[in-house]
Length: 172
Image (cartoon, rainbow, N blue to C red; front, side, top):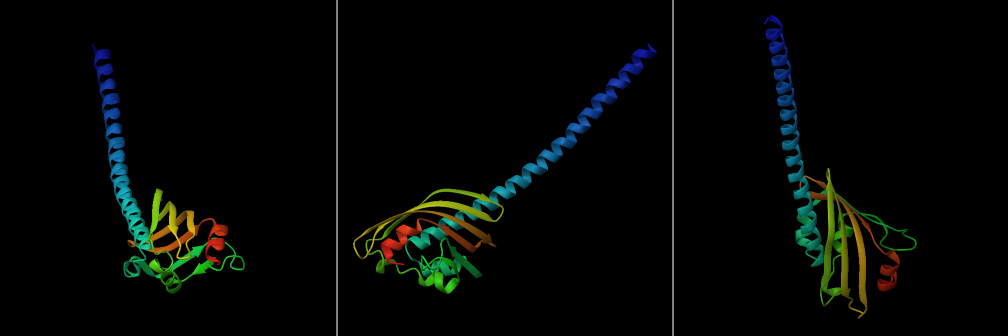
């Protein structure tokens, strides 16, 4: 009987310990889940900022773009400046002056994000751009952007695209 009692206490301790450990694990999982949800919310917000930003670029809405960038915004375009005039690092003034809308594309543009992924304060987006230029030529290019978001605004935009096509089409 005494052995039975000891064995019962032994199993009670093991079961209680297991339940306590599981509770600890559950608390950690719950905490991680809450943090993950908060992270996902922030990532979703960052992706929404990028979506709105690209939409504003599509219609050359400079007033909207001004409200969506930080004071120290920078825009980097892939390429060598000696080969492509727009390649390299640019400031806000250069970026905003780039949007001439109807002047370059009188029939409008089709600028579509095809995929996005976010991590931390970065959003990567793939996009397609299609339009007829004011010169009557078709311009179709594919882009990859890497955006850095700070406090709900775009701090930096890195742009990768077919630089040869841009140079040939626009004489840059």
